[in-house]
Amino acid sequence: MAVRSNLVLIPARMASTRLPGKVLADIAGLPMVVQVAKRAQEADLGRVVVATDSHEVLKAVQAHGFEAIMTGADHQSGSDRIYEALQLLDPQGKVEIVVNVQGDLPTIEAKTVRAAMDALQMPQTDIATLAVEITDEEEKTNPHVVKVVGSPLAENRLRALYFTRATAPYGDGPLYHHIGLYAYRRDALSRFVGLGPSPLEKREKLEQLRALEAGMRIDVAIVDSIPLGVDTPADLEQARKMLAS
Image (tube, rainbow, N blue to C red):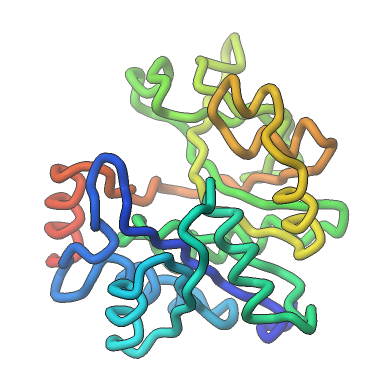
């Protein structure tokens, strides 16, 4: 896949419910969203742009030498925000693949970002995402840990059949913790944002179910570790310790 036909977008909004302004929180001398942009740049997949609804975020990102673009403040999801950014950045339609890296994953590794792109190699795959095998027994029943139910395609690769907050699938065998990083084919992203929320999406409060309900194919790369998502002050302190070391 030609790097110039890829676009890595990082949605970053200031109005986080649990930790407002977290995308600009200082981590090892840089705003969190800039740490994410650095990881995305290290993945070497293509152009990296932060999509934000905040002039403060825009200026902070640009001050550290990264590209940023303003998007609307009324988006319901990160996928809606990155779709607007895609339209603004590439109205000619040259970008073929869009990678969505959440702006609150400051410790994500470059190889983890690349894994999502690797899972999009099959032409029939519309969307690719990531998961890691659950080893903590408490996580298996924790509704905040989203599980992927998938059919094995190869070693470390699944075709997603369902995403759920429940403990699934039943029986012996591994359970997989979903990581919310996505790679979309451009036409798949366009279709996805045009669908509107689906019944199972609203019931489970999981946006990716919209794609499955519409018959879209999601493939999953199994990776080694879960990147730390910063949602609380404790998460922020942990991220600071990890990147300080």
